[in-house]
Image 1 (tube, rainbow, N blue to C red):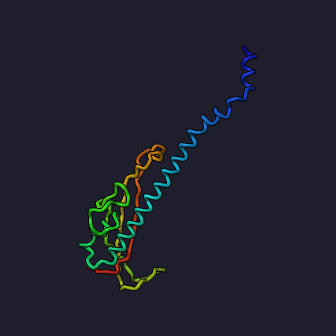
Image 2 (cartoon, rainbow, N blue to C red):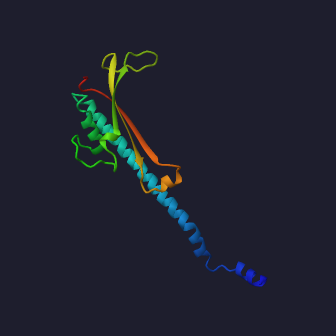
Image 3 (cartoon, rainbow, N blue to C red):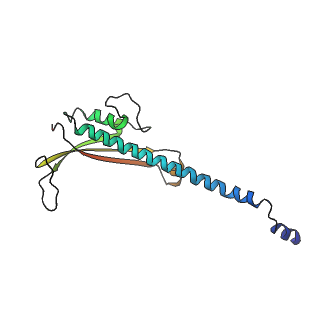
Length: 160
């Protein structure tokens, strides 16, 4: 019996197939997780680019209050009217928050003074969505993945 086990321990046939069978699932999971991470970064980039477009739209608007919904639509779909498909699946204009913030521009200790008087207005866009993707990253993580994006733009248009 021991002689048969020794003979088996020196046998090399089939070792490559065995190693492949052990390593291939791990490599496939790593490859799919890397693809999922790339898709997540692309989704976040699309969100940030959309928020920048919405901020640019609102910054040049003549009516800051009434054009906020149109700016949200620009951020999510690329169009100022509703009814278009979002650039990110599952993202809607209701996921975008818009704040108009007054920022002091008086200077002071190492403070940059911009043209426009003692106070400036900033449009701040924020959004967060739950990322589903392929599911490999959420399997490794303890819970759902939430993508958050934010953009600020100085308002040049109407100051109402």
